[in-house]
Image (cartoon, rainbow over all chains, first blue to last red; front, side):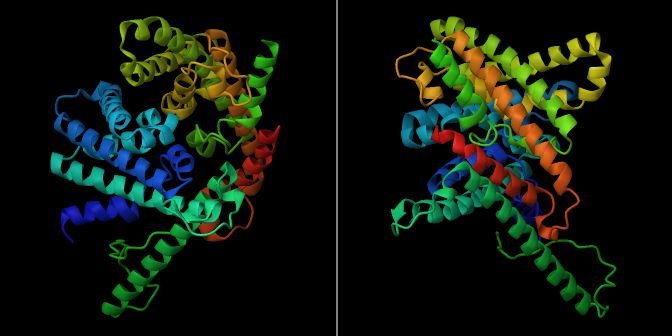
Length: 227
Length: 204
């Protein structure tokens, strides 16, 4: 697997910001009430993440180390301000449904985390790939939670009405916490199983008894599983 | 007047609780709620910064940024003000109460990236109280007094949720949960039950 594939897998599955690292939780809980909201928020965050990663990576040799955090925050805040103007002008519906969570993208720990851990050290192209991959991991997670909550809470799928049966629990805040908790648990369960399977396969290929494998788990699963 | 204040207090502390209903400030709620004591400390620190931040950002927005027509810079301005306030508060506490600084030290820098504070600063910018606090009669204009009461009560609601969660987590830490439910998932499910309890207040 080449370098970019590895970065992509890292952002999408092995270090999934929402289910694995549990970052950016406020937006995840607040905007997963419907699949459309989740998708909109995910794409907005992905755009901010891509732009901020690219800019920070370009400026990584210019920004002095001591003031890097304020510098990162200003760059991210600028990107969010631009995004807010664009959404206000062209997508007023999404702008309204995101409400206070749109300016709060600035303090989303995921974006600052990627800036600090990746973009401030790596070349531009790598940072761009990382930004898109992490953002997509977040988007997929939010959309899945949105689909679950919308399906049970209002009996529809991306706004299409399926039936009149609804469970109010899933649309209010208690449902958000519950679905998020269960999704994280399922994600951990599935990744653990996949990892175990991969290790067993590798051990078999090397004719080493299972459980005594000297190889560390490299977690290079190509499976497209998401909780 | 009195009725409005009462509505704001009830809404900000219970029915529109920042953590359990509005989902703001979840990071410290999950990260710093392992012990009741540290949860209480974090809550107090957040309440103080919330109040100070609103005291600075609300007049700045209404009396400086709106007349100059630079409302679109609010995010950049606010985040800087919050970061500066947190730094000042840190220095202040270090100077006047070293023992408090010792016990609170690590939580203070974390407050800058707490969504609840920027959330309050952004929420109170609405023109009417009714858009921020559902239930208040329409037509009452937001002013600095209401904004500050809202910020203070939002902070108290935050502290309440943190302390409750701290108490529960001290007990669930040693329970024999399934491996995949350990840590965050079980905390989320517990938070879900707490949110259900707080949901009752929205029916008032």
